[in-house]
Length: 441
Image (cartoon, rainbow, N blue to C red):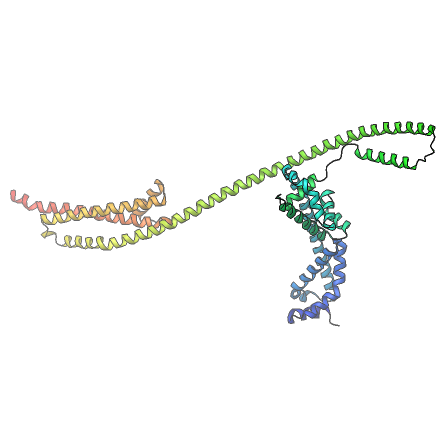
């Protein structure tokens, strides 16, 4: 196909021509894969980088049409993308291996003696149940404590394949132990095996075995015709070897004791390093619990405010109905009384007094509603005083207290109406008493 890269990109972008994109991949896959392999040093990772680079090309094809003017420009773009992707992959693998190492160390520190007591008697039987490759992977990873790269190189597989094989083998061990009544997680099992499967041999055992093997080889090589003189000389040589062996064992013991002391110091330092993390975890758990409690409290307050709002709306509706039912007829009656003051007599004053008593009863009812609303909102004395002041001055308050303000304003209107009735009664009584006073005079 003689089309340039630019033409192939245009065909792929405008016509969704998969064959055009396949041709671009065929032209540049060797360059991309080789550049990736030089940086990640793994065939699997290099394939992953190459796939990611061409995926980016497919995603940005439309943008590249405006900037790509020749095959060399597209080649440079693919090279740069491959390099950046390879760097990201290398960093990701380094972080993964570090996390894996830390997790293994933490699991080993968390492994309890009780778990190992249950696992130790049947560990070798469980290892025997594994196939040869899985058994070799477990021995290399947790008995010899090699990293996954070494395990993969020894078994002739990649790092990822080694990790999968080790994980599968650990899972099979866990299932075997579970059938025997020993319950332990895969991570905990790996930590227990890594920490306890291989213990330090007695001090000087390796040297003693080496010496005995050497002596055995020497004895087998000696012929049956050795003379008594040679036997005496050999006895002296053996005494010298025994003396040297004892000295070596003593030195080895001192060395092993020093190594044990250093290891104990490392364990103590690891425990001290772990202590701040434990405290941080406890502090975070405490903060999480506090935030959970605060969220529950806020939700409860929100529900209570929603209920209070519904009650306030219902009370405002009731007040409106009461105003239409009682206040407006009373105002009309008062206007009638004001227009016909000359015909009011003692009986009329009694009627006004009865209306005043009814008005005071309604005022009391309204005051009880106001108290109920204020208690439901849990407001303080200062907020209550501000609400009454704003109601008297005709001001505005927060939307939460607006229904309360309307009820309080209604209360003030009913009180003013009561004051008006009281003044009207006093006026009528005074007006009714004036003719009698004039007659007596």
